[in-house]
Amino acid sequence: MHADLLRRQAAPLLIVISGPSGVGKDAVLRRMKERGLPFHFVVTATTRERRPNEVEGKDYVFVSRPDFDRMVERGEMLEHALVYNDQKGIPRQQVAQALASGRDAVLRVDVQGAATIRGLTPEALLIYLLAASEEELERRLRARRTESPEDLALRLQTARQEGERIELFDYAVVNRDLALDGTVDTILAIIHAEHHRSRPRQVRL
Image (cartoon, rainbow, N blue to C red):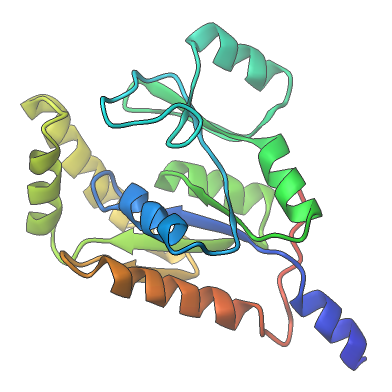
């Protein structure tokens, strides 16, 4: 019995980091990578244009809309959605290979995508990032200078709507300004605790 429990506790987790646009999902994942954590960080595929500071295959896999559609048709996406007029999706093979190798797989999706993954894989670990206030979130979005006033208003409206779905998630973590390492430490504590559950999550794709 104890040996079986230990085997199940060692089973890899599918960890979903989500939250509204501008909350700092990319920054959190970047810091996790910088700290050399033993996870597989799934690279999202997207049809949107690459921003100047982004690296192909590291920040996103940038694909054309026709190529994205073909990937969906072939069942190569674990989850996909239209996000602010651009398609985004999670390559299924990346996740499957990571879990098969015994590594925790970490991925970032919007709230819509998190809901889809919850339906497909109920045992996934869903973590919601939020800003300390709506004012702080708006300040971060403005600082990016990548959205028009109309897009900014849409993202803030969407953030309010997404916040109403927080009960979909297992945990909620506040990503405060100038406290990125604290946010990462909290996420790592959650993952550590999840690996020591008496009834561990057993992810099946």
